[in-house]
Amino acid sequence: MRVAIVGATGAVGQEFLDLLAERNFPISELKLYASPRSAGKEITFNGTTHTVIATPEDGNLDVDIAFISAGGALSKAEAWKWAEHGAIVIDNSSAWRMDERVPLVIPEVNGDDALEHNGVIANPNCSTIIALMALAPLHRAFGLTRATVATYQAVSGAGAAGISELADQSAAYLQDANSELAVDKFQHPIAFNLFSHDSDIGEDGYNVEESKLVNETRKMLHDDSLLLSATCIRVPVFRAHSEAIHVEFERAVTVDEVNAVLAEAEGVSIIDDRAGNTFPMPITSSGQDDVFVGRVREDSSKPGSIAFFVSGDQIRKGAALNAVQIGEYLVAKNAVKEAVSA
Image 1 (cartoon, rainbow, N blue to C red):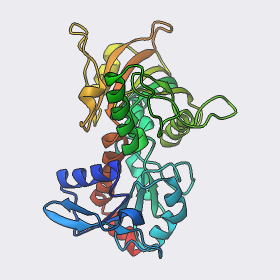
Image 2 (cartoon, one colour; image 1 turned 180 degrees about the vertical axis):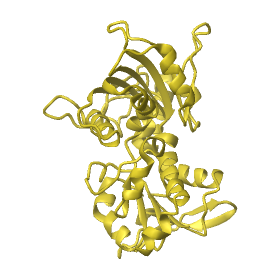
Image 3 (cartoon, helix red, strand yellow; image 1 turned 60 degrees about the vertical axis):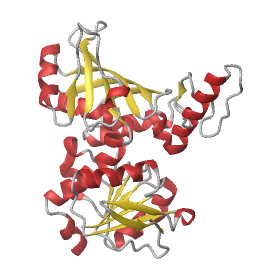
């Protein structure tokens, strides 16, 4: 495949490069695009040095597949132009996720939806991906009817600037606990603190991140009747999101039934050591492809319902890995050249 990465110098762009190399994605030509200020930078991929170039004004990326992680504004302005010039656009922003023309895809959950694209495929929100890796197989097995989700979201969701801000504030605080922490990327200090997710609050009292999780889940599970509620919190963790999830199904289920389903779920690893009090943690899920699930127990407020905890790498499965897997799915289904020739 002729492959492009748009936003190649960002945190997710760098992860794209690592994953494409690790997974031996079939690349005949690689083009690295970024903003004009990043043009001219050199990046090494598989032993070859590539020069970063500015995103073309004419909309022609001149590739078969383009992995996009350059922000919603650019995707809104250019995604369909890129597609019109023959690229299958796999977009990591929120620009097109809820557009009826655009499939929203997690390959393990609804991979075949990707085959119905019109040139643009959307990568879901990171917190949605991490939740659905556990919720989707349970939904298929038992029929999910209701879920409440509380997220503990890493600063990597705000990009490299978020990671730097946590590191800088932590260092400053440890040097002088009375120092005023410099705030730039976030509205509030993030070091040794946590706060409601830094996205706009709607009239219903839910922030944008919470609404994304609800609406994207319904779209991918093809069920607008699902009862869902989310509370999304930013925490001082570098790159893995964690989530506490309570679920109800069409019938009463047991912990053993849930564990049996999760044990067979692709992309899921169970860490549930009650004796050792060891469960999913962001420090261990960081850098890993699988989403870790544990603390599986009956919800004490409603017998027959289940509570559990998940943790997954926000940059990998929550962003770059999922996008690369969409590309792999298209290649495996011989869908890339067909789409380009069409």
